Amino acid sequence: MKILLISSSPHKEKSMTFLLAKEAVKGLAQEGVESESIHLDDFRILFCKHCEECHKHILNCPLQDDVKNILKKILDADGIILASPNYINQITASMKALFDRSAHFIHCKRLSGKYVIGAVSSGSGRNKDVLTYLKHYAHTCGAQYCGGISSARQLGADKIKEAFKLGKKLSADIKQKKIYPKQIAIIEKSKQHFREIIRFRKNDWQEEYAYWVTKGWIDKDKQDISPDK
Ligand SMILES: Cc1cc2nc3c(=O)[nH]c(=O)nc-3n(C[C@H](O)[C@H](O)[C@H](O)COP(=O)(O)O)c2cc1C
Image 1 (spheres, protein in one colour):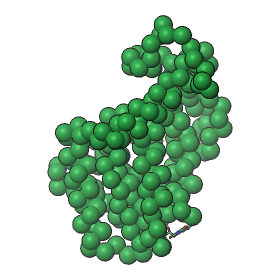
Image 2: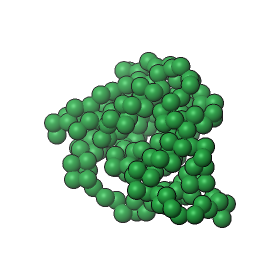
Image 3: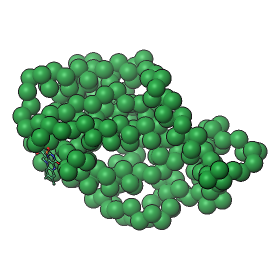
Image 4: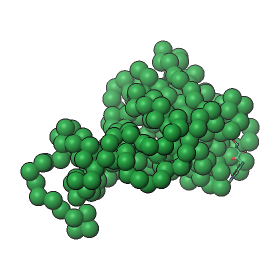
């Protein structure tokens, strides 16, 4: 089992968000699960230019930076911990830039079968919107969300315990291939939406279309339908 912790605080090892997420990693370790941690601040991440090249040729982005390596690490993981401080009630710009560069994951639900947990910290403790966004990202990429942890200012013993427990839950969910029926319904609805778009754009996004066909998610012989209908 592989777990990837992606932390987007520029404070890196001293980051409150990272320290919170690390407690989940300790919970995973108690279950015998190893995790890799990365700080987005250590990588060069350019903004998406919306050239659509990644939809035409999967993971083939013309931008010369470190994003492809990070996306490969995500694809290689069974579980992903997304850790971001609250920046104006949202994730950091670095994490959003990474998400934007992963649009192919959304089109092809590349995180299907994977599990995500969110970790957020802030000055105020108003972290709900940020965690909700991380959950949305998981679903839109096809992953299920095991839960979120958040903290304000200082890491209290209760938060440490909660994070540790969530790490253990992530391990258990992956081991038993846990199904959250409500989440699967959300993911399926999104899949239905993208099925029509992928079919409609099949001549432009040939590799993504081929991916859907290979997965058996699209019926090649079915007539094209406009996504507007
Ligand atoms: C640009 C910026 C925006 C922030 N916006 C908020 C905010 O909207 N609400 C809040 O409670 N804290 C906000 N904060 C405070 C951080 O979320 C808080 O200090 C957090 O714990 C930092 O986490 P870190 O140590 O992991 O970097 C902001 C900080 C920065 C630098």
